[in-house]
Length: 102
Image 1 (cartoon, rainbow, N blue to C red):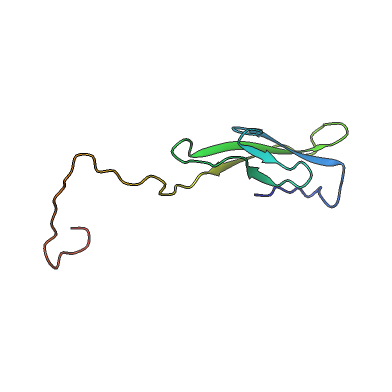
Image 2: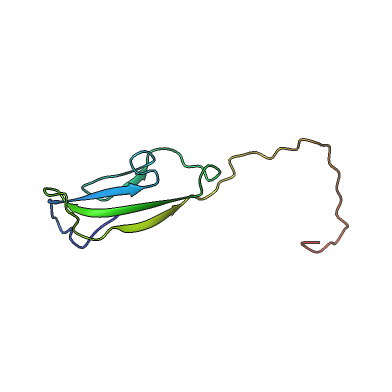
């Protein structure tokens, strides 16, 4: 993910900062380019979404140049847990020519 401001037209005097859930521990921002990346593997079973705030500030004075922008990172689920059948064996049947969903 990349954040950009209209002020970033080769301006070397700005920097991007990140705050919120996981800023600096789970998510990092490149203060020069606005690139955001995860520093560890995300798992939807642990946390489904993170709310972060990004802001552009003046590198010399540390004063904000724009209001902060809030955004949400939603973690997609992958099938990383194999199915478990604890109390088997299970038996089932489907009548011939059954419609889908019956």
